[in-house]
Length: 429
Picture 1: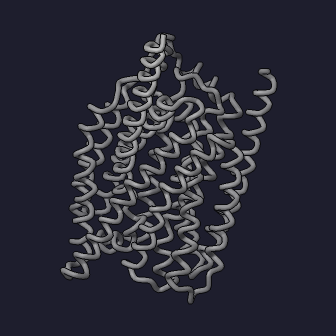
Picture 2: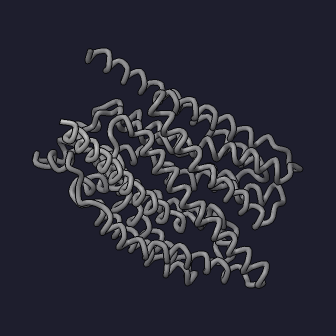
């Protein structure tokens, strides 16, 4: 009897260990595919100089990227319900890396548009829903917060390590070896490309074809339009999407910190890069802490509180006087980073509150992503318009204040979702 009990405990422990190993693979894979695509986060001015493009043209590329994400989110979810995550993710890494090789040649603006379109397919259609669904299926219901927190915090840690190396390389080549900006930036691109191409086969062999719970449900016949109607009709799905939309906008605002600090506070490119890299180190702390807090306290309440705090912190950034030094900027940027990454670390765990069947979970993820990541389409255009229409600091003030207001609306959506979950629990007693 005791031997049987010990054997069962050993199997459970092995199962947990296996799940966390697979989660680690997902973390590393997710942490390597996006940094090159969003290289502007640390090197925006250097990209404009090296590629000979304007801020408006760069914004157009990211708007197109966001539009492709939006158009492929639902097909991505449909694909994730039918194709193995390891196949989808391996293909995504290989395609994104190959396009990165072309990107390193610093081609024309037309070629850049093609590259960004390819990245939209690699990181949107074949990657995103597969990543979220694989994480959701790995975690038990009471582990959703920590698994998604570890996913976002872990990939943030990977990105921070890579960004630290990249900024150090850039500084070494430009300052110590006196190379020009394009040559130094090319070395940084090679770093990210090499990592993706190495990880493509690793993801294929390390991940499973399907989770057991998913395999059982796949025996049922799936009808796309019927399933889509069932998903669309759920208020919880839309509230989950609203939480992600407003939380993601808070995070999106941080992409412009580099140019904001360099333009309005007189910091050098290396100083700005150092501050934005320091912000990246807040991601593993904020995301993992928020994930565990959501599991032990309450997902939606924790998310609402974090959104309110992040909105206030972002609004405060616009009130720093022009003479503020790098220490003051570092402090407020780190606080904003900690809070926005905490929001990111927990907002996908609200998917568990929607009670979606595994059979259509990919489709639900696609719809939620369509709503939640729509800022990829309009925020580059909005920020570009505001910064050109309103000279100086005013454009940034309007931009950051508007996003802060949306963050407060997101907190209301999280509270509404909490109410519906609580009412359902009461009715099921």
